[in-house]
Length: 112
Image (cartoon, rainbow, N blue to C red; front, top):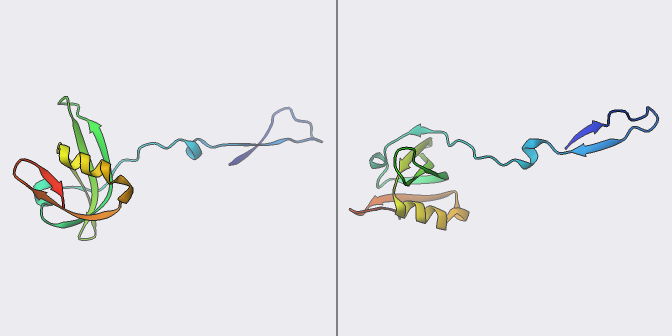
């Protein structure tokens, strides 16, 4: 908290007021950083999920998932429209960070 002296306060009675900083209460969405990698290049390898974000696509009328993870001690991000992965990550969000393997089951991708 930042201390502020109120303007116009007498020099004898200086009133100190605690005002919050914007950063104390504004919890914005942080950009997920890392080296961009294709989902097919991550399949069947153990990764450490660090964070995720779900956004509306600018090009299609659907959502897409951004996953931030570590693979071989390097931070990466991957983008996918997989509904199964979106459902799984939202269901287990309180478990992040966690290790997983993304597998291709033909018609869908899933964490295993």
